[in-house]
Length: 221
Picture 1 (cartoon, one colour):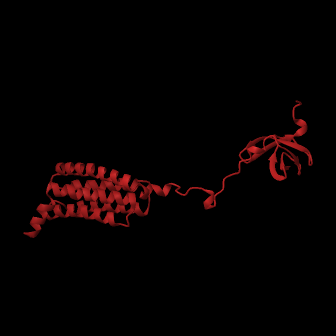
Picture 2: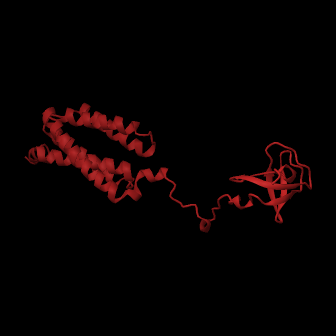
Picture 3: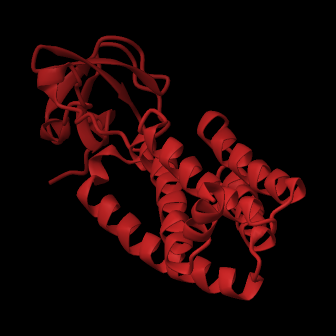
């Protein structure tokens, strides 16, 4: 008698829909937020109770359970071996296929599944907006700000060197070193050779690339 009452309760359309909601939401949120398995456990329980109801009623077989179980295994594997969603899609197909196969009325089960999916989508969207800082996508986002206070330094801005006069302290062939306002600067010419101790002028700065030319090459004013 108890098993009959339990079966009738679990296979009721309302109960079945709620169990499917719990199953879908639990598994989906686990995949998105990695809650140490708690949400996955709730999801598995939801699908497990759904199947148990139809099994006790004599409609579900071990073949249906195998399909359902395969779907759960694939979804759990996605947590351990990220497959860029491939295992999740295959797992969802097997899971939903098992739900339809286990039901006494696949058409009714399809309606229940659609309602459960719609509600689950709303809950999942709300969860993403509320806990967006904890989602799996944060694994692919560089959250640390590259600031000098944390030890990060960017390339120095050398644009202030444009127009300054200096002296080549190594031959520029075309790269070398020049002394500009008392500072040793790695420089490069546009291809021309400049001998050591030759006066140079900075004509262009591109990032860390300082371009110079001989002062004698400057056009007459």
